[in-house]
Length: 379
Ligand code: BGC
Image (cartoon, rainbow, N blue to C red):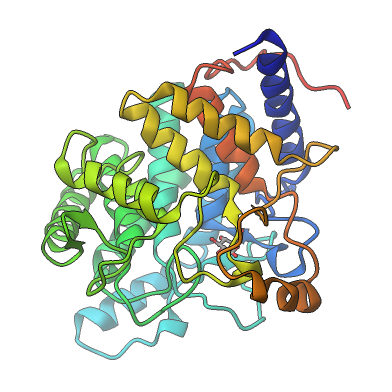
């Protein structure tokens, strides 16, 4: 890679950090996208990957402000969480609408707009991001984080086997393997930490083992992981079941077959979510290209990973904003216009795109991990 290219990628990382910082609310919440009305909220899913990227490059205060926000959201709902768990244990009917939502207002309040709210993956992802942060930073934990992590373990172990909306907020009647990957990854990561008590570690391990067993029985067809139980289609969210969530290890044939199926079905140059995607015409998602590069790297394919990183960088707008998706190779070109007409242009900047760009750049060693005193981008 030329020195110019390298400099360009590093500048875009600095710019990404700046954009993320500028869009972190005083509460610690990260807005998914400041200019796209239905994304002016904080998601556990997006936020956890953003916090992980910030922690990775030494922006510890930012990551910890987000973990504080998550913890306040959870602890302030502890009686609701306790009551739905108790009712479910008694065999009582608990409606999806009584369970935790996927997104909140930036101040941590519930949002009143209708949304496909019952999604479980974000709660696994935040546990994973928190434990990664603790491991890499060696910083001490707060009792608030401990309580919130314990509540999340209780919540996920009670509800992991329930159908819910997926990473893309669709198909709430299905069991999604990408969702289960995040749950397993989060529960196992927290079970390795001694900052939750032994009982929570045991509960987390038991639920994660049951979820993994179930996925390996019901979520595999043609040798690869599948989008949901009962289909042989793939979804790019499955990549996360290898790295970082390790539902399957890279050496396992299932991981290799899953990567191969995603690369065959969903890669133009960037990565599509799934073949039947029609949202904004089904473009290539920048954050998924970063997930692909991350896997390729763990399979020893650094050159392919660097190609994904450069492709993401090439999608940046002149001001450095990274959008959610781009329209170079649409899967359903006839569906793009209706989305632009109803919702405006594609969301940009999408903080999760910036976060995944940083993550892949750090994994490739293009920016150093955990360097709190690195020079800041000057606007
Ligand atoms: C995506 C979600 C994401 C949300 C906010 C949705 O369109 O499907 O994965 O959490 O946008 O970025």
